[in-house]
Amino acid sequence: MIKLPSQVNKALTLLGEAGFEAYAVGGCIRDCLMGKFPSDYDVTTSALPRETESVFSSYKVIETGIKHGTVTVIIDDMPIEITTYRVEGQYFDCRHPGSIRFTRSLREDVARRDFTMNAVAFAPGAGIVDYFGGTEDIEAGVIRCVGNPDRRFKEDALRIMRALRFASVTGFEIEEKTLWAMEDNKKLLQEISAERVRDELVKLLCGRHAEKCIVENADIIGAVIPEILYMKGFRQCNPHHVYDVLTHSAVAVGAVDATPVLRLAALFHDIGKPKCFSLDNEGVGHFFGHASISAELTEKIMSRLKFDNDTKQKVTELVRLHDLQIELSEKAVKRVMNKISPEMFFDLLQLKRADNLAQSPEYRSRQRYYDELESIAKEIIEKEECFSLRDLAIDGNDLITIGFTQGKEIGKVLAMLLEEVIEGRFPNDRKKLINEACRLNKILPKKPDTR
Image 1: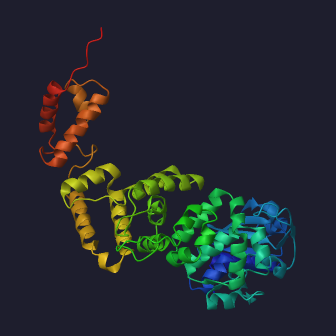
Image 2 (image 1 turned 90 degrees about the vertical axis):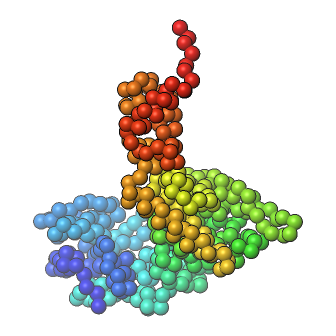
Image 3 (image 1 turned 45 degrees about the vertical axis):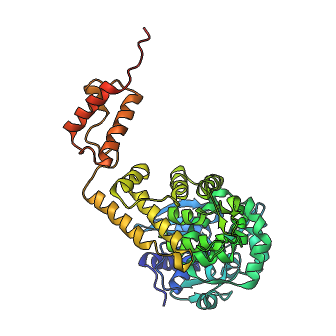
């Protein structure tokens, strides 16, 4: 049974009392039918935009996209998008319709939507209105286009990525004709803005069924990340691995937390392997330097897809360091945490775990090793031990006070003192560190007098 929030019911009731049809529609009804709680609700109505504004004249109304028939009404602090039934004209850029016209027909409105599961409408008085079998497809776990799939994807190529995202998030299977049309039209994705593709890609990667989606649809994803195509079917010829590079990476994606940074890092961590593959005399495959090459490719891909600099930097650094050997010692852990931050250190451990879990079963024994590294790191943090300049008991101002001149020398001395503390040769004690800094000041080479 579908239960709508009181604010949505109020919007439907007010439109109905004014003589108009009105239904909750799209993703909110799909989610309700799947037993989920929607985060937002869309309403579609036979009322024209100005008629809608008149119905809600006593409420705050925002003309969100009034040219396209959409206004947002605020009811009891809840924003509800209300859109007039509409029919879209010919699409001109694989994304946007060249024109729209309003209609009084719900059927005409839902006929323009992407997938049957998003074309189901509901109102308390009328019940479910489903012209295209969306309810049955939801029950069967099927993603199917409304009408002709080739036409749907030629109209808006981003729907191809949306189909993959829904498959990843829900675990639904993509209906055969829909999948064929996606494959036939995948090159049209190159006409879509990088930002739109990026957003759908991230949602895909963070889905519960991302591993399966990546393996089964690599050719389509390859239309926007062609570097992935080299990973598909690339045998590693190494006893540590049972999967090709793509499948190994997809398994790793499924083994890390569903955050954009970790999922992207897992997808890209071995993307450079095909470029540096070599066989030794015994026919064993090696990938010397693949972490560095993977990081370079990762940066290029993420720049191309217009990721923000912070996300790009974090993902690239994780990829670069994913093969780093970390000694089981406080010193080693402190050095890595100093280099990349504690948060990134724990992400790196997650990536390493996932990388190991995606290898041959007999080589998945490093999980306990990573447990120990994690315990060491947590103990360092709990004890508030020093592992970065921020934690050091003295700073640049202290050095200036005892006679150092501003400049690179201060940074050099602080780095030397931090190294002493990390190595355990000095306690993180302000007085003792100042004494050591004074000693270093005497032995550091002086700048020549150029007067």
